[in-house]
Image (cartoon, rainbow, N blue to C red):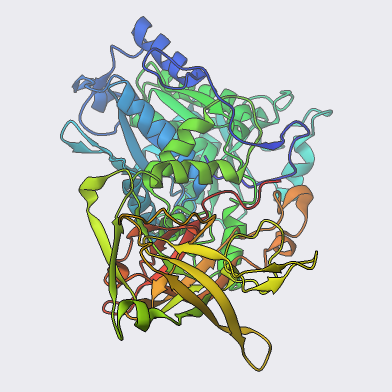
Length: 621
């Protein structure tokens, strides 16, 4: 129920960061869902419910004791793809609200469509929800359920509807049913099969069940109101014939319930109190209520029934969340898989280096309301930086290296000497310790830290030169971070005119942390990696997968919006402490941003780093 795909943005849906919201007494962002739950708890709306320890019909639950959960919610994904950032909002809402109000949140697989569902997706969903920090075990029970476990009851409920005159078997073609359904301006017309007796409908429905009719030959429909202004109440389909092997039930069934029929039944069997879904299901709510009322009347389900509430789905710029389109990206090789670090899937964000805490923070900040709109992707990155700034170890790295030679090193420091330098692992957490590295005659710096002719405001390395006004300018002095001050003297070019080596002089008695280190004031500080102990690594410089904030707006081909610069791979050097960094370890590369050791790095191999995000939003306009 939370698998949205982007369409054209609404006229008022500007790509802006999440708006600030009011907070409740506990300091949490206030929203209408919290208010509904608190109101129901105050009234005791569900206080009389009974729970027999597992999902079941009215008779099953009546045999149990009082429900130990004050509220029950559920996260009900269909296992037909990997979860994405839109699902994270629903996960955090449902599991979070259950935790806040002394309740339970079920993880339930809505596996009613055998043609698209696979065990791979089931496993991936379980892993993703756990990674986000949530669990479905409570009161000694693991609340992990499958819609397919309820197929027997759903069939029994369908027969009960037929016997009460609330459902009939329609043998029109799909085209005929579409033609008689009407539209928003025209009421529908009754099917010629609508007047069959309950006995006739029961016979035909059992023929469907027993495989006596071919696929598509008939459907079971609810008998409600073909003239209803809500098209969803114009005798919606409840069951269809589909000969397909189900991942859970195999070939036992050749008829399968429709999602809109199955979902309210699943909620009721599981004692769900608040069924939270996205706004596109708002028009389905009258049928949700109608169906549960009929089944309570038949004595099959307990009262009070669950209630459905809708919130605006999470729309993030520069992202698509249609599972069909995400699958197309994978199948056509535009990305390396569902966990490609550019994908908006939770598996992709995890491999990219996002933390569960950052995603939960982003979802909390985005709030829950009935108002739609778009949240800028930068808001997700802000939440990530806010989380990583306090926990990521610091390190120096050179991503576009050029060699720097300190030509007077041997004279000042001694031939072959290495100078031990150190820095805090984290500037705000001394308890995390210090890191060490060696400065010698040769080191690596960023190519962009040298300019033969410096532009205005350039405070890094440049050689002696004649300025535009004709005055002679000396080579610039900079500080090697955590090390000494050096003065640039020149550079050597290769055959293509590119800088192959930069030369500089060491300024004595200027090492950071020593007396007199500040005697020479410099405006520029550059990072570096020593040639003696620098570790060569591969770095994947990931960026946003799409260059357009609304890549599939207006039905256009989203592939045309792919960002050709979404991945660059470079050979880089990092300080020695990172040589044995474990997969999943996150670092702030000073000046560059946040990086993570790719979880796909082979055991024993040099670490491969993925860029998570920069230190600031490079897309801001």
